Length: 163
Image (tube, rainbow, N blue to C red; front, side, top):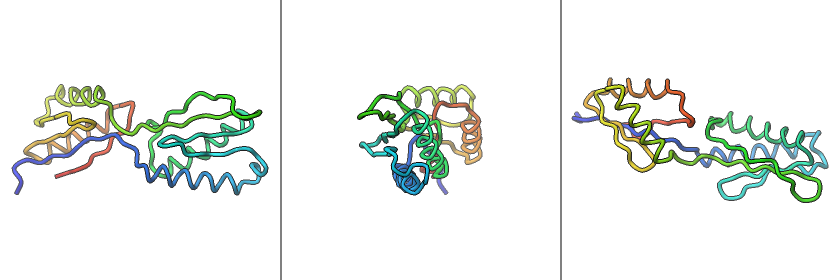
């Protein structure tokens, strides 16, 4: 039996799920009657997506389609950042959608400090873009998980590497 148990707290977006949501959104855009002959589009540019439409109203509809697909794929709204609406080619407008790919070092340190301030019988270490929690008891780890889930953080968290 292991003498110490641990898990990692990470904040990341599954790129494959974003790709799947992107593909589903593009398919729905091409099939929807109200977008026939429209300049509405969703394009990939690296890790970001660019939404294009004729006007702000259509752009908001495209954004809603993409958002619904992302939510169905369990991508948290906290991990999505919408850029400003900018004029594009001709009379169209565009908007960039960015995804938060990892926890910032400052956020990891702040989370570690919050856990330490609660006086759990655990050890919290910042390891790059994640926080490693270790303890002698699985019950203590579960208490930390419940505590972190209850926090109102500006990013979503996942618990990985449970040992």
